[in-house]
Image 1: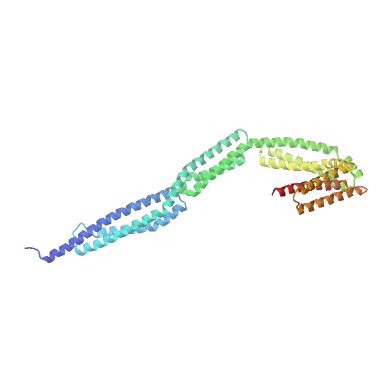
Image 2: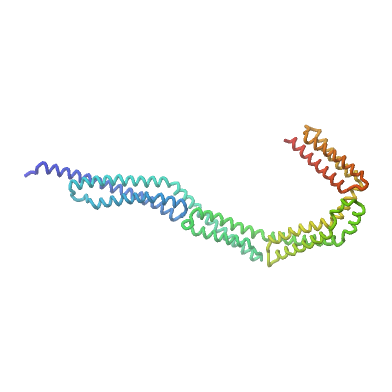
Length: 414
């Protein structure tokens, strides 16, 4: 007996609903596979970051990934729960099949949305992945360069030791380079990419500076020893001149010239003695610093500089009276020659000024120099002229006239 129309119609509705559920479940399976592949791809990038960098880029990417990953996982778990709830391979009832179709369609949309979010995440952080990749490519040669630089510094220090040179500063620089190299060798996972790259550069710089210091040592040693010999000779010469004394010279100054010409030289012998004592002390200290046992080259150079300064002061006090007497004798013997020299300098400036456009400022300065020349002549009218003041005044006029010539020429070039 044939079935009634009602059951056939009901079965058709159920079959259609079951087919729709199975179709939706198939699309959901494809969406799940697509989402899983997207997650795997994103995970591979994150894994790469985790293995090469512990820096801010990796942290920023991980922070941004967390909610995207959590949302995708939630979508997958919800789909798997409904997949277990409705087995579309069996003959579900109409209501169950309809509910399954609706649920699977929703899961398709949800998983596609999650896949789109992952794609957006990957697109957003692609520049960061590219940046880290390129930086990683730079890291390998930089690490090699840092290791080679440390090896070169170690070899340089070994050579210095063979030559008996104590390279203290180079040793400290090498120690610093080795510490930095440990950061490099620890890698970006432990120390961060940025810090490792910085450590690479700092390692090379410290190691190269150590090599440079070692290379400078032989020349520095020769320079110090040569200076010691030179200063010993100079010290002996100043001591000899000091032993000759300046009493007779000072007597001639006191007898032949006014007090203003020699009063600044009083006490010169005592001051020379003090300066010579200081020079001997500093030279001895420099010699000790330069000894094989010490080799404190910076201290030796500083001591030699102080020795030169002390010797210069001693020479001024030892030679000052003789130089002063010679100057005063020359000026007093022919004061006109000294005055003529200054007058010629002023006239040269005047000729140059008149040969071109006249600047009022330059003209005023020349008038002032001419007036001072006249005043200098009047200094000779005294019964006992101050020859030192006379000489210094005319020397100053010569210097200012020459400076004015330079200024005039420069102004006309502009």
